[in-house]
Length: 78
Image (tube, rainbow, N blue to C red; front, side):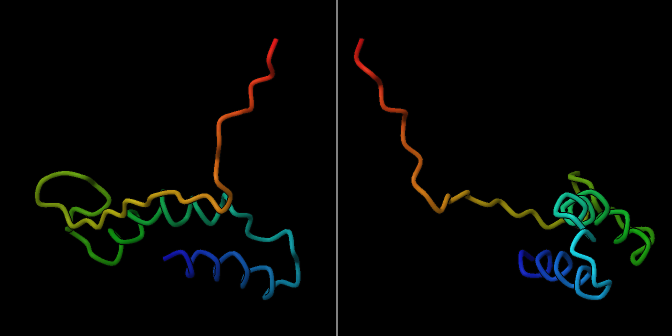
């Protein structure tokens, strides 16, 4: 799904010839917050967008692997 998020982010900018279109926060909001509501429109009567028994759901757990290793700050001797 990361590639779809990236495509939404970039294609809106390209289609409108405006680099200010579709900021990253809006793409995330669409994909995370509004995704369940959109699925309910296309699959009426389904339990979508809820984490409850019997609901249709996909969960993605992602480990964050930073591109640069994070280390503890260097302590300065006093």
